[in-house]
Amino acid sequence: MKTRLPRNETAGASIDFKALRDIKYATTTAAIFLVEFAVFIPITYIASYAVHVGINNTLSYPLIVFLNLGAIPGRFLPGLIADHLGRFNVMVLTSFICGVLTLGLWLKAGVNIAAIICYAVLFGFWSGAAISLTPVCISQVCATEDYGKRNGTTFTIVSVGTLTGIPIAGAIQQNNGGDYWGLIVFGGVLYLAATVAFAVARGVCAGWALRIRF
Image 1: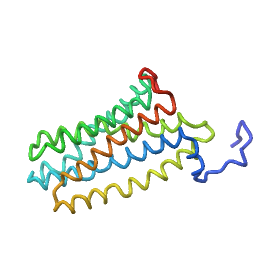
Image 2 (image 1 turned 90 degrees about the vertical axis):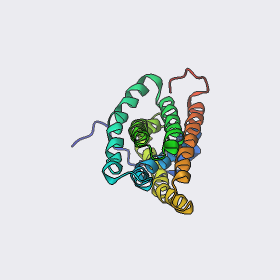
Image 3 (image 1 turned 135 degrees about the vertical axis):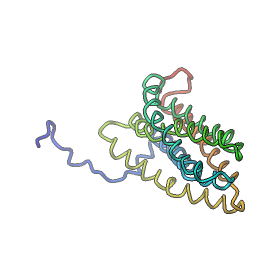
């Protein structure tokens, strides 16, 4: 194969932590870290929560299916909306809704299977943006030629959160004698923290006016 342009021999694929000196990129990375820290906690524990509160296995384990059914449109619809409202704006909205759902619906669901199913489906939908839009947010705060390196750097950092979030939540549950309320609060607070972080990143990158599409 022949390239149209000469190769950049000085560019590499190594992780570039020095890029965090860019405040726009650093705040975006922090926001993505928090939302990815939170997203896998409900996905991992929703089925075992249902078993814990006494719901039979026939209904408990399909909760993962319900969550993923919600995630199917949740992967692409927020992206379509983000084209009109702005990627960071949509991440602020979806992170906030996930936090409210976790603290307002899952925390209060108890043994109500209808509430648990509703949470699984709604969370699956609104959490989808964390997977599909976060790489796009990175692309908005770096040059095209730097995107691969910046994306790799961000998700190297994010991997620490995704690796530790689930066992930390499990440790909280164990510390609470097997009860799930602390785990749920932990996940919900992380989402609210991600909401604030995305709002700050948006303000740093594009300004604080509410009508800015970014």
